[in-house]
Amino acid sequence: MTDTSPFHPLSPEELSLLSELRQSPPAKSAVPFPELSFGQLVADKLTALVGSWHFIIVQSLLLLIWLAANIWAWFGGWDPYPFILLNLVLSFQAAYTAPVIMMSQNRQAALDRRNAENDYKINVKAELEIELLHHKLDLLREQEMMELIRLVKTLEERSAKPRPARRDK
Image 1 (cartoon, rainbow, N blue to C red):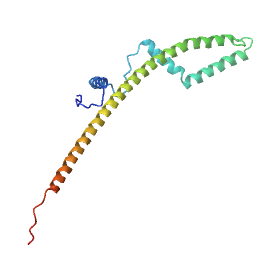
Image 2 (spheres, rainbow, N blue to C red; image 1 turned 90 degrees about the vertical axis):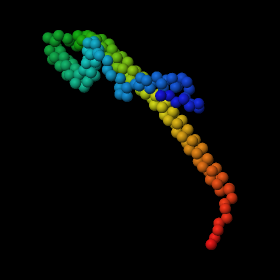
Image 3 (spheres, one colour; image 1 turned 135 degrees about the horizontal axis):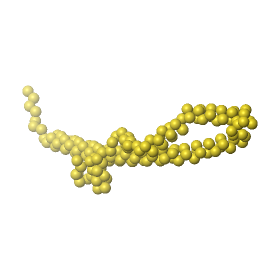
């Protein structure tokens, strides 16, 4: 349904965009999550795990145990000071978790972009619809004013006509 008044407030491009948005309205809620592949699911779970306080506390405890076990068993420790094996383990952990976290963040950024695009379409549609409503209200006000002017003129014409003389008894 498009407004075909001769004094339309929207440009032809805006009208075609509004028509397109009306035909396939974007969802009002967030864009649904697509089906996740196994790799994406693992990346999300690993990211959620590594980014939690539980992981930080457990990893800190394991590091303290590793350090204590190697300091107290100085001569029999498997990783004496300067803890080169511990550095290697932590480097491997960082080398494998960082790309997985990046994959998860990239996928989330793509979803965020889709949601932002959806929000933009909803906002554009709302703006164009509001502009049309304002135009329609302006037309109604204009019609009311014209009717009031017509009524005032009619009243003026009636008051300008000479009245017949009253007969007092």
